[in-house]
Amino acid sequence: MIGFEPSEEQRAIAELARDFAREELAPHADAWDRDHTFPVETLRKAASLGFAAIYLSEEVGGSGLGRLEAAMVFEELARACPSTAAYISIHNMVAWMIDAHGDREQRHAFLPDLCSMARFGSYCLTEPGSGSDAASLRTSARRDGEDYVLDGAKAFISGAGAADLYLVMARTGGPGAAGISAILVEKGTRGLSFGKQEEKLGWHSQPTAMVIFENCRVPVRNRIGAEGEGFKIAMRGLDGGRINIAACSLGAAAHCLDKAIAYTKERRQFGKPIAEFQHTQFTLADMASELEAARLMVHRAAWKLDRGAADASVAAAMAKRLATDLGYAIVDRALQLHGGYGYIREYGIERYLRDSRVHRILEGTNEIMRLIIARRLLAEAA
Image 1 (cartoon, one colour):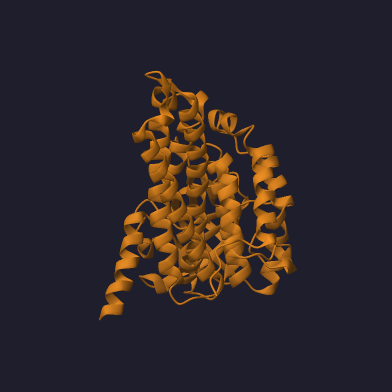
Image 2: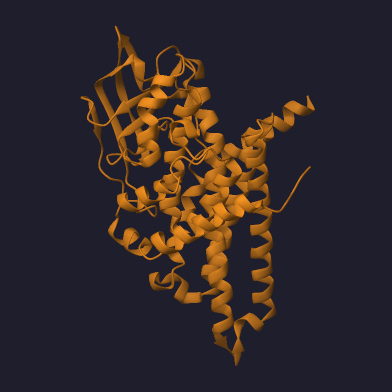
């Protein structure tokens, strides 16, 4: 049976996230953006509420919730700060891959500190020469006794330099997806270094840089899963990551819609509030309708992923494509309704525009989402 109303527990979880976002993120988000601050202590406060390990098992310190609850949490956090919410999403994704694919020793060695954010995690897939074509990655992990020796570089890595654990997709075998393995590299490992901090359009509350491996020796026991399983692990992680980032777009859009409604009721032109003009009303109605449609698709994808549905990956791609495109468009229209004031930092819209733009690129570009969807459609029709 399909239900469209959240349970009492889900409402309570969303309210907890909403309160945290209002009290701990919103008052500081503009300053973090301006000063490029990675808010370590605030992140650890989020972890104390279970937000660093939302869908991890309780055995290792996780919250033991589902993907639907996670989507609700990330929407609420992103209403206050999409950049910080997105980093928490990435951290969750790394922790979940260890929980789902690591052995007992690995799970108990790494996850308690990730759940509390005593240690931060980063996901290392993209390379300077392999973005959308992720299976062509070139970072190598050569076996040498009981170690792997890593050489190569990863690009656009969130948390780079600040994180303590790097889940790296590296080539241990031949070409293509089957030659890729997942290996945990700890900060401080000899041969691990970082490039300069990237100067980005948005996402200023999390560091982004290249992660570089030069004769970087890592014990074989840090491999997550079997050799050759890395690409499958990476793609499974991205299914959830796509839903999470879609939820972050929902939060940004919801906040900006609320701001636009309030502003158009106050702003007067031609002798009356601009909310009384039909064009403004039509714009707000379209924004609200599109937001609701995107939210339903995100929640449906989360529901499918929780249940292991055969089409969960396609549902995640659909939700990510729709919610990030519509979310950005809603933010953009909110800025337009503010006129010139929307372009001014003081009015609190332009940060959401800058932060939400990248959602259409990361966790697989929206063009790749269309390819995933189309391939499934054409395969079913064959």
